[in-house]
Image 1 (cartoon, rainbow, N blue to C red):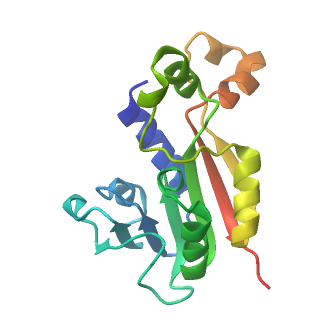
Image 2: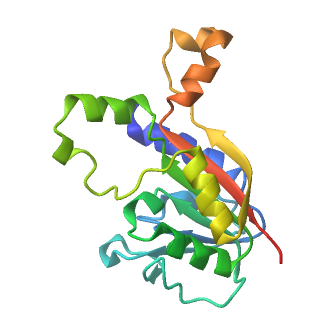
Length: 187
């Protein structure tokens, strides 16, 4: 399956969990997620890269919004790129009224393992500073004031295996991304 099709599938999965009518997309890139949201959604795309033409140019660790400004905050393929993921995540929690949705590459995906085995160590995803398994994400979310309510696994798409229910645990274990749907913990 091509990466573009996988991205579309991931965006569709994420859109199912968006709560409320206002969304902040931190690290939005070219705002591709916007087309997967209902037309009446108030959407703000934020990115540090001005040339991608986000609605707001800012760093995810310093969000220029008041507390609880958005119903849902999206962090899709962002945390693995930042030096202090806890700092960025806490800032997203601050501006969220209730929900934060995070997607990160699965460090156990066959794609990741294949890169590790077949490429030189110094060329592997240089832009990825951190890797997050489920336990690391649980710890990070808890420290940021979030409770994970759902973990969505992307399934490895191997046509032969899709016919056999027996292989579902293997397919999800080695899928490309993990999506974490989180809610704020109220004090």
